Image 1 (tube, helix red, strand yellow):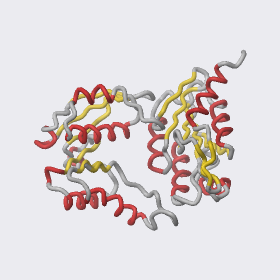
Image 2 (cartoon, rainbow, N blue to C red):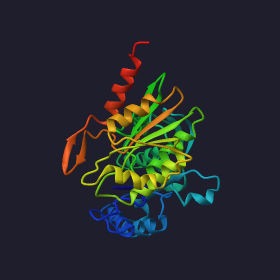
Image 3 (cartoon, helix red, strand yellow):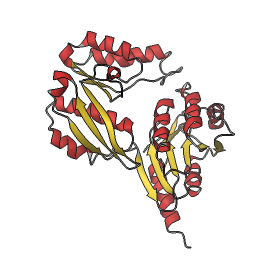
Image 4 (cartoon, helix red, strand yellow):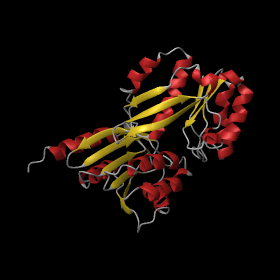
Length: 314
């Protein structure tokens, strides 16, 4: 079974895919090796994706899902749609609706609680529900699991009464960072939104302008730091990111020591602020000069800093 969530310009560079077209073609090869395909009808380049998918499997082997739109014609013929019922910075409730006989046969209609925030995670959950239902999973078991699900390094949340909410996430390109910041920004309780982020060296060079663009669209403060710099100078990498940020709109702070950057960002945050630690998730190393250098990991650092700040003498 192949599940196709989305596609965006990424993994393009001397050591990866030469062009986006090559990346898309390689990713669509998933269809050629699948008997059943679950496809996001909201994905960019959907026309190419659906054409390739329809060549790979019969109609009853292709399952489309999409976010519910106000105009039903925009649903792209989805077998299943989802919509947000309630959401906050801790999680959400979403409703799933079937369309047509194929979707109705799954018997997944209803509301589900998801213990991960963000409507983008609702889409991922819908895809997982379709796929697991096709292999015999019970809808009630799904309901229980979704209410308890945790994905290490994905929207991991830490809260502090004095320093707000901290998220650790692997978001590493325009699409993922923009979606994450947009979600946080939509929450009315957020006073200041800070992000700690960098970009890898010697790979994915095309990501750097997009990271800057996402920061410019969604953040108040950007701590530019190191993220697997390899053989490049992280300051040079950060300069490429910063070139796409309006410094009059977003405060830019460069701190190449990632541990210090995380510490400073949390220390500077207030009760209604959010700090996003993006890119490395639970990685316990930094790739520097070809060596996997031990690193405490973003989540562990955030926990330690919050504990230290909480236990400071008044």
